[in-house]
Length: 156
Image (cartoon, rainbow, N blue to C red; front, side):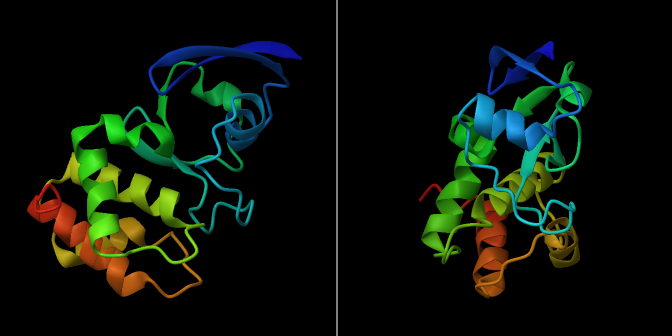
């Protein structure tokens, strides 16, 4: 065990874990942040997405120690970010979630996209969400929500 220090949602957090423990297990089990979901454990479904230094990363396989120098933002803190809040509002407005399991990862991915490119084209939106699986079939609503957030109309 090693004392690992991570900056998560603007707070410096410490925990004693094996440094090879995947980040998702530290977030969920050590810090009680359950927004990121464990779906496939193979970095193929996107449910485990978080932001690390503003970039979307999948947390189910990457060792937590890899993020010791990063600013990690989870779905729980996106409402504190202007773009993250706009994306969340758009998902609600477009009813872009059914079961909700994939939703935090999709919201994280959409937030990362709009931070990097505030006016993405349709193919860029689809590409940014390509690695995210939704088994409920909410794809059309998710795409509408991202277009909604990009248009800046989610605020009203």
